[in-house]
Structure formats: structure tokens, C-alpha cells
Image (tube, rainbow, N blue to C red; front, side, top):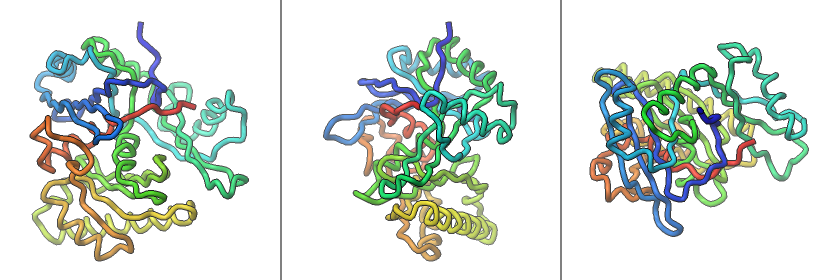
Length: 319
């Protein structure tokens, strides 16, 4: 019998998580173990190309990684779920899910009765407790979630959690936070850009940009600079909105996720046009990558970025 999946589970895995990310070109996976006083160690990073079908590739991955030995999480892709910011309803805890479902009924691309929903709290200002806070609601089409669950069952992979890229990126951003300040992290992949802002280990803002990694790699300098301009404008708008919404949080810096050779040009451009420091991230500063030599290259770090973030998950309080 299929287990009931949740986006945010209370499960704790002492052996770390095996995260699995199904992309168009293939399936990425990574396993990370956290130590009490050391950098999280990536013990495995594997990729299986999708030749015949995702089902066949997943079965091949399961055998290669001995997935049955781990607690596994699958990261959804953009378009496979919706993330919606809503005002926290003033209802008892046991009525929260029903209240959120009611608020989402006109905001989803599918009928609310067909939605699998979970919620993530966004803490407010401790000095202004009377102000209503916000929540993020994650909604996915239930038939799709069941289909994904069946896919993993057929590959004999014990799927414990379904995750989303925003939370995976949050897990990496938390490792970058200066004490008492927030940090903005911007990543790009084939589907576009993702900006997150975290503070105190919590996700406060998530924004999608319609600028892909391929756009930033354009050989035509005019086209590339137009993408830089669009990214800068979106960032400025996002930071302005964030400053108004969360005046109690000071964002220390903007960090660019690994992007290979693309990073230097974008970093220079953003640093000249934004009011905050802009840094480029190499994951060797956060993670122990000694067991996976291919991840020394920032281009490989970009390919595995979301997968690694999902593998960093720790216990999360489910509401």
C-alpha cells in the first residue's frame, strides 16, 4: 500500500537523505551526512541519463545507489506544483489546513478537490506579535503526486518525502546566513531563476524569474546584457517589496549559486547596479566534497545544486 506523502515531513534520518531529482536529461541524486561539528559531507552524487523512459532510468539509479538503504526525497520541478503566499488564518491549529484550502480554491490551476496541500509558516516580527503573519501554501495535483509515488514504488525506492526547489535552496541559504542577518540566494537552471531570502533558518521570500541559464550564456553581448538588465530589475523590485514587508530583517548580501563561467559576468553587473554586496558561491566552502571529485567544478555544482539542497534537509515541523 502506498504511504501518504507530505511535502514537509517530521521524519528524522540519522543516516542523511538520498535526494532524487528527475530532470529532462536524466535523474540526479545525492546523499549527504551531517556531523555535529563538521561541514555536511556529500558521500555520493550520481546521474543516470534518461534514454528509454524515466521508469527505466529510475530503476537503474535505484540499483546503482542502493536506494533501498536510505530515506529518500524527491524534488518536484517548476510546473509540477504551485507555491502561494497567503495571510495566516486566525483559526485553531486543527482547522488550519481547511482554512488554507478555502483560501486557495480560486488561486490554483486545478480544482481544489484535486489538490494535495501542505503549509509552511513564515515567522513574523517578534516585536510586533499583533500583526498577522504570512504562510506559504504548497499545492500539487493529487493525481500527479500519486503517479510520482507509484513510479518510485515500482523502482523499489522508499520515498519518504516530496520536496520543492524553494526548500532545497533554503537549506543551502541557511548555511550562508551571517549571525542576526538574512541572506538572498539566486540560482538559475534551464527553467529560469529562483530567488530566495532566508533569515534565522526560515524561508521568507521566494520569487521566480523568467531568465534561464541558457539566456545568461548567450554569445550575443546585447542579448546577454538585456538578460542582466531584466534580472537586475526583478531583484530590485523583490528587495524593495521585501524591505517593506519585513522591516525587521536586514539582508546582508546577495549570493549567486554556482553557474560555471557565467557567474563572473553576472556578479560584476549586479554588483555595479545593486545596493548590497554580491558574491559568487562555490560549494566547497559549505560542503565536504572530498568523496565526489566531479563536484569540484562549479558547472557540476550547478547541475546538482537543487539535488544537494534537498539532501541537506533536516527535521521540519509539519503544520
